[in-house]
Amino acid sequence: MTKYFTFLSLLIVVLFLGQPTVLAADAETESESPIDIMGTVADHDYFTFFGTKLYLPRLFLWQDDNGSTQFSTYGSTKKALASGEFQQVDYIITPVNGSMLIDFSLTSHLLYFWFGLGALALFTMYAGSRYKKGIGASTAPQGALQNLFEIFYEFIRDEVAKPNIEGDKYKKYVPYLFTMFMSIAFMNSFGLLPWAATATADITVTAVLALFTFFVTQFSGTKDHWQHVFWFPGVPLGVKFLMIPVELIGLLTKPFALAIRLFANMMSGKIMIIAILGLIFIFNDMYGSAAAYSVSILSVAMTSILYVLKLFVALLQAYIFTLLSAVFIGMAAEEHEHDHEHDDHIHAEPSV
Amino acid sequence: MLYLLAGGGLLSFNTGFAIWIAISLVVFLLIMMKYAMPPIMAALEGRETRIRESLEAAEVALAKAEAISKDNEKALREAEQTAHQIRKDAKEEAERIRGERVAKAKDEAEQIIEQAKVDIEQEKQSALLALRQEVAHLAITSASMILDVELDEEKNKKLVDNYINNLSKN
Image (cartoon, rainbow over all chains, first blue to last red; front, side):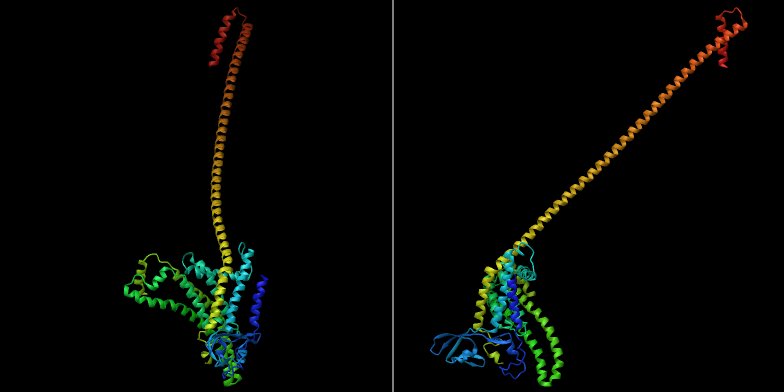
């Protein structure tokens, strides 16, 4: 137990000890505004560690002018630029001679994504080692961490998976849903640290997460699911053809909504806090320090309230993402038994 | 605004980053689903099954115990009833025996008294007889001494007897 606890606390200490540099105007960016909202929420090529910026390696898959594909790795953006093969135009790194295919560079969001997965891995390994020892398996669970693990696990299993996925099928999806919930919750919570980046406030991350749910949903789709998509039962022939694009769009809007919902919620909370705290610096620039001091009272109070709200939203959004994933999987994995049910369904639908 | 245009912008999809995320997530999900979660799920499910079974067994045992205790109570009540009956019977028996004894004793006493009365009557009769003979004898003796006549004893006796008989009737 102590081993895992040490790991976990070490990770948290590392994350907490970083200096909050986000709010201060960054000299390097030479921005005119005293606060840098976009710079705070955007992805970066560095990771703030104990107040210093650790520049992350850049990996480029690019095509030179001769048409041959090349893969180059550099320790940091500066080294990439110093090599002379790459240039920076409006924050975009492009090859001097050729075009960029895929930019595989490590970013701060990717690191925080890994931290989220890593925290969950430690948490799960700790719990697993306890159950292997028999604590919690043959006796009652002991300690706050194991109980916390059980609360989350049983919540996902009994409140999310079981009611939404029919029959015994739900057992198959519990690990997926648990992993999704916990990693999103960890990423969201790490995003609450002022100097940290929120991986889930990145449309790429949420899009990939939603795509995973999309693929899991489609792969668990029953014959009925696909019949509903391509040959809607209980409607005239012409309507069947009309329903195909509608249903296909319906399939795609679900993960799209998942991705946008999580992204927008996490992003908006971060932007709101920075904007409200930024008022202090803006007032300082515009009306002097007295105004800044007085507005700081309001700003700090509102930030505190917003932080409580964000902590709630961090867990709520992880829950919503997981719950909707379970609902979508449950809908696809559902097996209808009678055809006349569809008729009832169709007749009932216009009145809804 | 620059960031919106840049590769790391707010709303732009970064392909290389997405591939990283996808690969990490696939590997992580596989590890979780294959190795990390199943033992935990099995342990928890086993525990739940065991607890459910224990609860059910406890319920059955409780029902059994309740039935037994109900039986015991019934037996106890029956035993109490029997004891009560026995006591009642014994009381009645004792009452009856006592009554019998008293009646018998009364009878005996009456008998004894009756016997005594008879005895007394007999004694009285014999005493009276003896007294009468004595009186007759005395009268005869005294009369013969006084009169000194030649009356034979037979005639005298008859005379005196008649007299005494008349006397006693009065």
